[in-house]
Length: 579
Ligand code: DON
Image 1 (tube, helix red, strand yellow):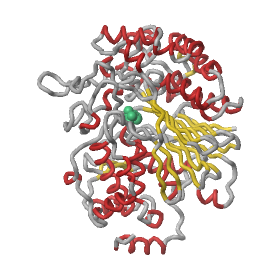
Image 2 (cartoon, protein in one colour; image 1 turned 45 degrees about the vertical axis):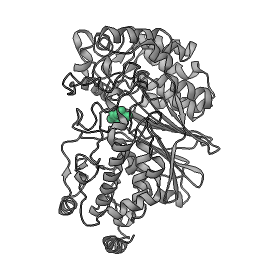
Image 3 (cartoon, helix red, strand yellow; image 1 turned 30 degrees about the vertical axis):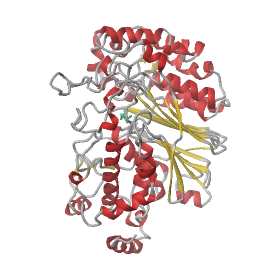
Image 4 (cartoon, helix red, strand yellow; image 1 turned 60 degrees about the vertical axis):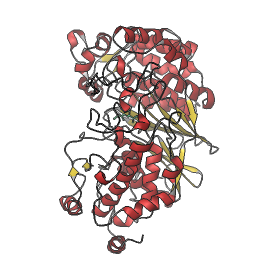
């Protein structure tokens, strides 16, 4: 706190302390519950999770049932043909992390998305079977259930099987999500047969989506476990379809797939313990690096959305994202400098480089980059015993690679696009990644997914995460800052407008109406470039739970209910549910 502007602004802010917090009171009221809370991006999946908890299942059981259910009722991102991460904190304080993210096929090569001249082949890592990484979700859910759950496979798969077999009624958000990818889905016969009506017509709200092939695959998993997927009919069908259309997936890819159980990233921010995703995600490391930098600034005095706060957040993000892009990758392939990046002394060195009056310039920092994409999903769960689970899983892009192997009903991911297609050269999104994330057989691409659990004094405090590509990190970070530094309740915290900086392009992205015109002018005067138009209109869909009160102030007063949950209003069909 030794920067002069901080002293000045702290003094000014102290004078205005009696002012009310920013006007975010229009956020929906969080859902309250005493025994358990489930927050997901699709209301039917939320109900599945709540039912599991009510029937005596723990948070991991609920997470597994929700994961399978979302594969049916939230096909844009819920999946068994993709992968993801599960952060677990058990009631006894044990923390662990399951990495069931996709891996590159054995036949993958560093240059597989380049043409003979060495140029990137447009969309080769995004569409069709060449874009598909070996899926991990089924093995991830089965290992989670076997090691940390209490219920049978049949119990946890039953709701997903029912929704696939009997169908579920589509609502406005479900229909919009399918319509958004209709053109791509129409190109794949098997996908079109499921997600479009006769003659390629889109479904309307109120109609039912029935997925009999997916029901059959889920039933076979209920009967025989993950071997039914990796050594059975689905793997064979996917390999066959891949080989027929220029893909490189082989039977051995499925046979050799393995889930990793890893130690989560942990750091302390203002007395709160953050537990989040380790490499092959960049999420936990980068959230912690940014928090370490920000910890020495009086953010609550500077205030949510002030030019000073935004400036400091942006500078911390700029430095952390350079590290993300230069240094991080699959831990089985590259040495990740995790202890350096998490070191408080390293954060101090970054603070020393941040000019309190002036925007930094990304061009002066090491020129490596980051990518972003379009659809993923996060859900948060806490049970009666205090077990907490945060899951983010994905097909990467909306509806993944846009292909379904005939007869399986399984949408396949396009996670291969998360690799560096060509080191040092902007990818299809105009972004750049480094050598540490180059493609190699069996390697997992670097992720930004950040399923996060925050504890205080050894007890669960918050469960949070989001989709949003490279913005996942800043969305999750901002939800945490909004609660801890800015005093928002959990609903305000996940619904508040967001800012984002990722080193390159060197500009602050804003959701529309995030900052006032005079705040924007103050940031421009510091040398920042702002952009509230070129990003997606809405960023991510955070799912948050706060324990013991709906806000810090509420908790300090003794709270009310035990759990408060909220699904980001950006998720039209999402919900929080408890009992
Ligand atoms: O793992 C990652 O970082 C990306 N595949 C996540 C993609 C994503 O969040 C898309 N969502 N909006």
